[in-house]
Length: 149
Image (cartoon, rainbow, N blue to C red; front, side, top):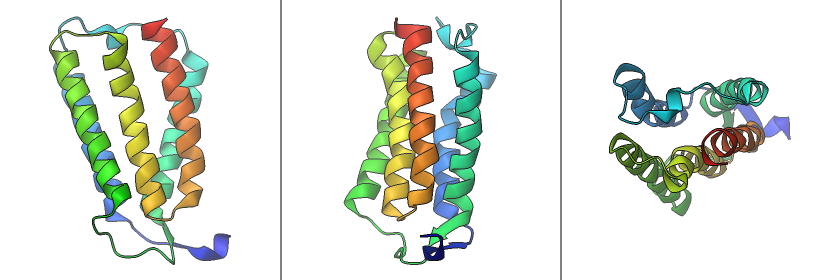
């Protein structure tokens, strides 16, 4: 399976990561009204695991390329990736509008993970799928336990 992969820079993976991080950079600089995301997390161990797998996920997306992947173009998986990003940005707009219900929290949690997952699938980067799934599970637990339950 590893023979299908080579080291190479995937600008699309880096761009996706940077696009997903834009609202986070804004949030670091400008607190939202009713900013519950700044509360202390009660899932510190899961958060640490999530951070490790997030880094592994981004590394896999950016430096591992499947030899059989085609040049990037509009595919259903790329459309889903872009739609996930849009849904994520809309969730941030609601969050900055002071809405912090379960739908908004899930909107801040699930769509970015789905964007990474569908991009990985489009790029035939199965190696990146594994850390993406682990990150998604941890990120979902963090969101649900800290802000919904």
